[in-house]
Length: 341
Image (cartoon, rainbow, N blue to C red; front, side):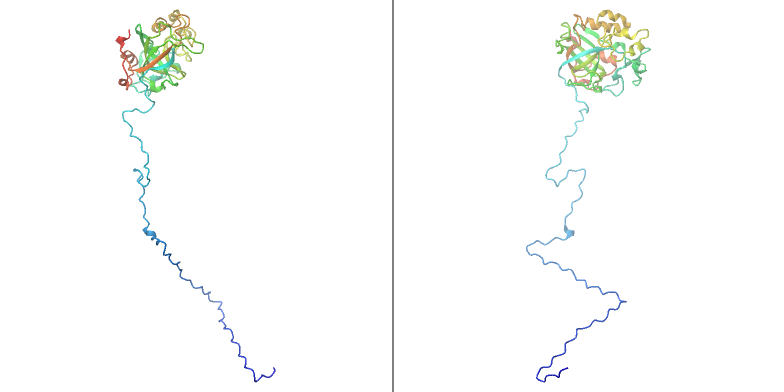
């Protein structure tokens, strides 16, 4: 080395960097110290946050009471009137206009003779096809379907006086006239024959001598094929068996099916002479069709006549035959039979 210059300040020796003790590989690493969390300073313009335990809680809603938190109360239904009967709407008491009628007699057990039909004291009566006796068991099958229950011959129409008759009928199940089906079982209706004719060809309707006459019928059957403006299918012997052509020959042994409607299943016998082919118990009802109802008297009328009708209280002349009385009958007007002359 060159010799030190005696005129220069000596250069201090550098300070060595501190040395760390060697890491003992047998010791676990020392974790970094955990710092306590620091909270941001509170903003003096904000309201202090409430403690979580101080947040109010609502009691669970009582399912039996209306909610009280909503400003609009829940809708409530008017209480049911215990005097109002549920089910089909009741028949109006005013006259229903513009419907037409037909006739039939098929000897089958009437639909209203089965249990559970209508609001009545008991089902309509049916008769034993072999003995003619009234059947007390409403579950006996129809003669038209292998059973022994049949229509009773006394459900044929009968005359009260020159302007009033009574009888039984099947009611329609559809249309705008208020008849609905099973609910009509046992109900009685006053039919008033009008001069209206059928619009498609201007045919049929009531004979002039039938117009203005009335008939009270009790519903003992339901016509599932009676629809539209067609309201009632009146039970009239000889008026046609329709689709069920076996029952009458089974109920009245020794007669052919053709004897019961002059071989015309739809429309039946065209003249009074055809009634002589029927069993004796059915002949008066068949002749009623020509004597009082004036069926085809002038070649075209009466033929499926139009009627106005309204529900009325059932007269005893009908309920004594059917054995069935509507339980709401007192709500409907009684027909003054003395004034119907």
